[in-house]
Amino acid sequence: MKAMRDVWGDTLVALGKANPYGVYDIVANAGWVGVGLSADTAEFAVETIRRWYHTVGKPRYPNMTRLFITADGAGSNGSRLRLWKTQLQKLADEIGIEIAVSHYPPGTSKWNKIEHRLFAFITMNWRAQPLTSYMVIIQLIGATTTVTGLTVACELDTNTYQKGIKVTAAELTSINISYDQFHPDWNYTISPSPPSGPSFPLADTRKWRNPGKKGEIRLENVTL
Image 1 (cartoon, one colour):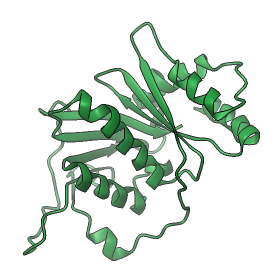
Image 2 (image 1 turned 90 degrees about the vertical axis):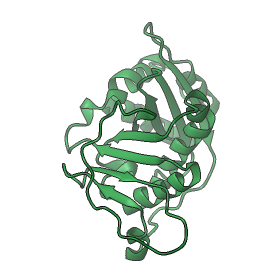
Image 3 (image 1 turned 60 degrees about the vertical axis):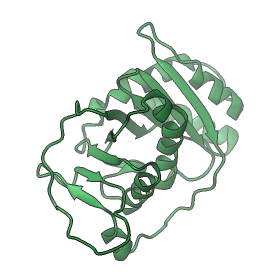
Image 4 (image 1 turned 90 degrees about the horizontal axis):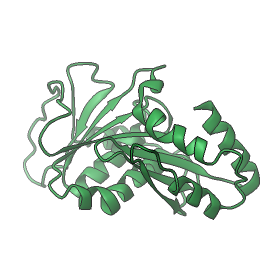
């Protein structure tokens, strides 16, 4: 991970800003990387997931009923970030399915499969290559392959993302979220908002999820 950050550090000097955020589809052995030109925020992270869903995810899995994301516990998809959860709520409302999230405990990001199955090969593919333009970055990431069949799609995100967005307590309580009994701070599910009308109390616990649940698609995602 450090090597990846060192390379991107050089990119920041040469181009001004380049924030990559990666998504890895375990079943398809396929990566999706968004390269942002603005701040590395939770809004940017969820936008990358949104673009993956509409461009690749839904066409690949037309019967998807649930999205299961495993993510690092820090960074723009951190387990304690309010904005991460409110943005996921917007995405769940938009696509109409549950989004389940499990965060890796502190100090265990090396277990995230995206590190070994995607980022490591991106690093090898662009080794010793001068990152002179955004197009070069997109092409080098997109050209990453392996003998096991890895494919990677990459696109530039030219949106502007604001740092320091505050999420109010009211906005946080409006999230349709249920927590697992096992480490609820790291494991939770965000469901589409219920239709307007009489409100009913939401369950505050959920049994440990089975990643093999029918209709569920599992992603690994993290900020590079």
